[in-house]
Length: 158
Image (tube, rainbow, N blue to C red; front, side, top):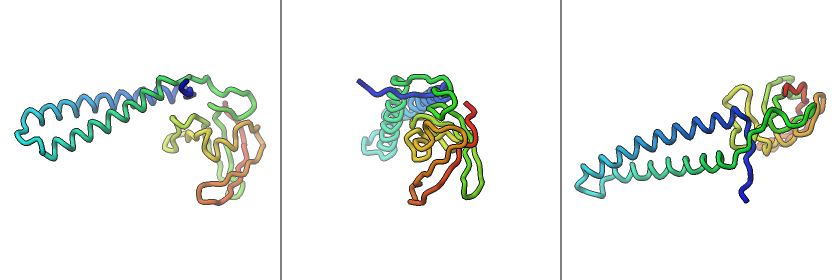
């Protein structure tokens, strides 16, 4: 049986919108490919080959998103009150620099540091370290550079 992918409502909606964008791109590249095939006398045309490669890339992205969405289970907020769980939004503080920031713990499919709050995968070093912790707890995390960072969970916003 395929492994379920647990997503927040927002993450599911974002992936659904991304799928729709890819489907639009597929329609566009399919039209371009048809036009190239109809107008091309020489099937070794590099434009035709580029369009075929682009279509294959788009189809692969669509298949991946459809797979994730087909296995999606929507989670409603945090699962464990008072503790960090999948779906929790929390404020953590770097104990060395004093810098604090808001993160949300999500499944890998919806992780993104480009949004506010940052969506941190529950499988990442920080995400897995804070799971099950309470406000006030301190965790040590080895980051990809090999450095060990220490974070304090300031609050769980749910």
